[in-house]
Length: 470
Image (cartoon, rainbow, N blue to C red; front, side):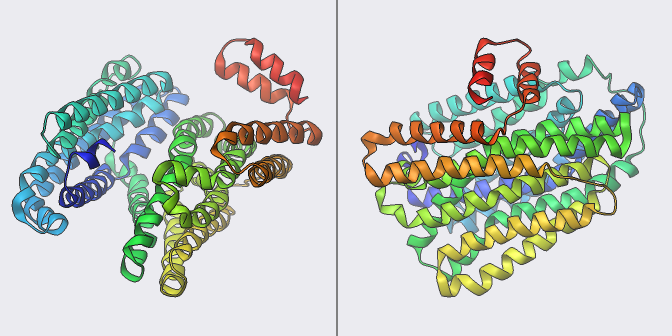
């Protein structure tokens, strides 16, 4: 919001070009080593091979630094062309050349974050990441208000990447000394399919937007961009932290108990994905009109239906990510690449066929197909290497309770369609969810024990919640 008010429309186009190229170079430059850092360090550490874990971490860092240097040089050399493509002029090439420094420091930060996950320092990771984000926003805002324009954004990202790269190092060396020699070939064999998968996932976020840009109107493109931004909350708040937590946990399980331990961890994880993600997805779908109005205003209400479609279908994507994590934990990364490429092709095909005829709603249908094919492909790919089982009872109970919650919100809105009653919608929805959970006996005592272990304290509110739900 602040950026839009302190820049021109042309500069906003340049900013879009910067965001796209910056994210793409990050994805490519990491070489999939961010995931390899988690898996190799967590597995070797669980197997009590601390020296090998240290050597593997050192190898990963050395190679990602070389990759960052190479990609930042390429980015610097391409700066005039990025400026021409995004702004129609060479005048912004200095901005992109400055951004090459942000590329240089941000690519290694992805691997350093992975190492923190591998040694189970999640608390430190959260603190450092939140702190880095706060510094980025503060620096960017201050420089924007001081009249530095888009260079303020670049400076913010440069600070963000630098903090994420440097601050975790002291915590990492407490556990692993970053010495020794570990062969790069097995790490590269593991990471390259993940690089392909990451690039495909990156492109999947732009397939429907590109098709709407080509075949739709500017109004449809603007509305659909709001849909993607709103639905991205589910990925940012739930799926991202889910992968961050589960990959090192499953890698350690593989190191201590083999594939059987990974299968047990997967079954338990499906329960908690259903518990957390089903109400979030159904809740966003039910509150889609309010979410769109809050983000972009009442003039964008045509975006409600696509947001509902993406929100509900994204439940399949949550479970697909869970399968991908399990496959990564047992070093079956080629299967992750295959399940991703099939889903992206299906998404592109649906968008190509339907968007010229049906407009932006087809974009959301294409994304829903992507989620469903990703899940189906994951189940197909995993069948020969893992005996994965879903907690079906938990899935249908939590989903049914979430549908009850969403129905309550929709009905209360139809009776009182005013923003004044928004808290009432939420309250009635939560009440319906709690009553449904209790009626279905969906929550078990083990769920509260898990919560207590996660909070490390026997908090009174946990016991109160247990009395209500059981």
